[in-house]
Image (cartoon, rainbow, N blue to C red; front, side, top):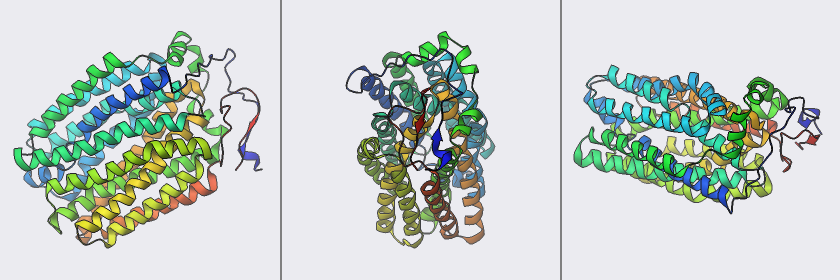
Length: 432
């Protein structure tokens, strides 16, 4: 056994541990997760509804692919700097206030989009959108980690990812239809309305997790440990997760900019067809999320993450050689399967490895990593598209990064995590 993969008696354990309420997913825990998944679906509709519109909005404003890359990257750039602090804030003041505050700001940003008449206003709105929403996903993932144990965390993350993907399917499809028949500004207004509905849903349906309430009652517990100390407990595993998550979002950035522009300009794809393309990816992912989440609870996380990254690289190669809508859809189906294999599994493994006192901070740190990839991907994708006139070189780079993510996962991720949890005070081992 590799000595790096053995956790000795934790020096990071609090002097007075937080009592763990292991809420079975069959009772109140699963109801809370499903309520949060419903709220996340509404939010994702707001995110996704504008995706098919951006290439046409950019064209209407008379700017090019690089500006579209800057627009996409500005969202992630602000989230890089704020995801960690916002995740830490959710550790201190609770998950629910952070979720609601992020959504209100997101609604305001979409209203600014609807009135924008220059690219600079759009970039400003996109940056604002990233800034105010930086805490939503870390807080949501930390919320689920608060309510679950390693035995059921993959299943719960699968439900959360399913809610996300339901919105992912409906949002772009609805956006493509609305843009096709009602113009390119109205979907932003609808996104704002959908976001405000999400605020109402969270206020009514979501209660602060008991674990979070106890942490807020004892503020000193969250100040006794830093994110860096948590990462140092399992450096190989955290590095591999970092590479895998970066590779995943880097590919999305390339697809959103370089491939979408290529599909529109070189192949004449219509907005409704782009919506259908994202719909196919979403449907496959919805079907796979819960199933692969459950499988990861039974057989472990590692090889699902590695297999998902490998299939992601294969799908990007298929995008490179596709020459018609059928080829795009086949590649999209494989990509959807890859996403469902690694998405909830990565989040569950982060929760397995993490000290429960700083769930939000650690989820925020990984959110910053994810968003850094979403800065580099769109900027590089836009540049390579402008340079070459197609998306082939950009997709090739994305495929290599994805395969490297699979390689890093195969070497660095633990094969199994003890089901008793990674944050106990007793000695536990991880078998590589």
